[in-house]
Length: 119
Image (cartoon, rainbow, N blue to C red; front, side):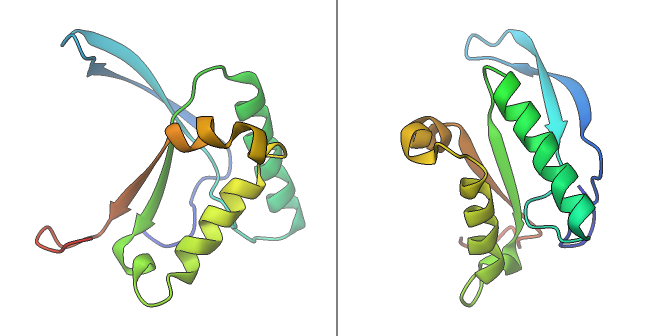
């Protein structure tokens, strides 16, 4: 979660916070900041990113995915946005089988957007 387009995360970081659930009761939530999709800092970085993603997603029973994009990534032909989505989807070997579950567990977070703009 850096200031540029590229991920600043090299090794996953875990954060703990509390949020109110549907019954307005505080619930503990763990947030895992993973290396970004499509970051190309060389073979070793791409390989280690894939390993962290695989281990997390194969061992954790309940996940929510938050894919963050800058508002400018959605302009024009939105190539950065589309590339990130494709990298995310291709990470799941059995995507066709688990597609409904992945889509239900994924949200987009648009950053650096003018509060008055319409997305």
